[in-house]
Image (cartoon, rainbow, N blue to C red; front, side):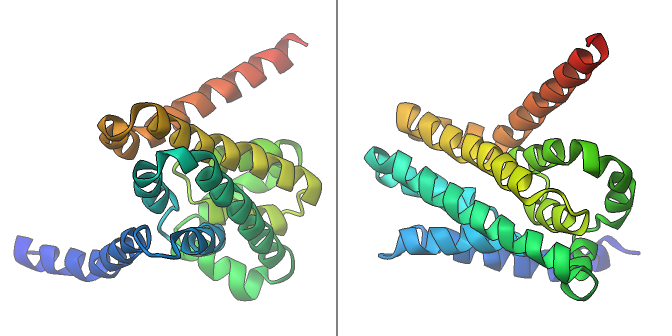
Length: 208
């Protein structure tokens, strides 16, 4: 396959995603930006591919005094959307949930997680809420695996809240200079944090 053909195919694949990204960015400057932020945060937990951070970052930078409110909107809407994803996985997995999981290419991961979900499901939810993993896959999987709903909601609040309030607080404190760091490295930092968290949990369980 020639480089030109390959580049053309990649353009077909990523062009719609880029348009979605640009559309989401534009919403951050809308006069009803907070309502749109809630909407994007909600649907991102179910199916939407663009994370709400894309809106959260410019909104906090534009109105740094509202960083807590903006983070709270993200957190509440994302958790509510997560419950929607959970219910899809619980009652409509074959018709709706499975195609969504397949779209993100996580069928194999879901099969591998089946055996450990009952015991470590809450940890998987925290990982999905903190790291760049598609949170919608985690929410749908939680319902499909019948993870306790209360456990799911609490883990979602912890992970989503930690992520959005951390980003907002950093932007409030340091402003624009850390924007690039957050956009390019925050996913890596949260992933490392989660790995250390899991490692500490495993060590503690082994010692006890």
